[in-house]
Image (cartoon, rainbow, N blue to C red):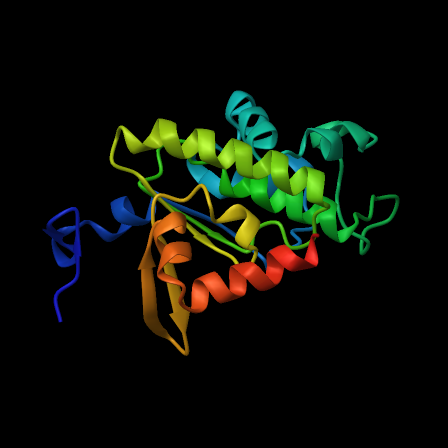
Amino acid sequence: MVEYFDGVDLFEFDIAAWRSRISAAFQDYAKLEVLARETVGVGDLECIDDDARITAAVTAGAADEVVSSLPRGLETQLGTTWPDVVGLSGGQWQRLALARGMMRDNSLLRVLDEPTAALDASTEHSLFERYAAATQTSRSRGAVTILITHRFSTVAAADRVIVMDNGRITEQGTHHELLKAGGHYAELYGLQARGYR
């Protein structure tokens, strides 16, 4: 089976170059017990010492408050296995992981897998507004953002919604098209919406 990206056979890509254009943030994020700057900076190793890039990623990942709360800011040693260091909450670790996923500002493919699972509703809303803005900007260069989520409140802004069940695509279309179709997506969306009424 031949796989293509933008009409080009993936086997024609330089693997390292292809990987350098992908970024991701996951629900099961890594807790890297290094300096705060490094836990963000490893999202793009070529820019791990670029203060401007790290600061921009921290802002894009809504981690400003986390960094400002640290005793030495980005120079704070993270983790609980070191003496005199700072332990973080799950939400704080997740914000730093989101910032790590924003380090590559030239990504052609950004994968966000339940990236806000440990965050409160207002932070989640703010982040998705930022993702939407970043997606609009990156679309002009052909970039794609894939958001994997069970939270239907975040899906409505997507250009295309793909519903999967047991590893198979069962529905696809815009949010409005899927609601109008009255299938599984519409049923699940209705169930979640009722929970907020």
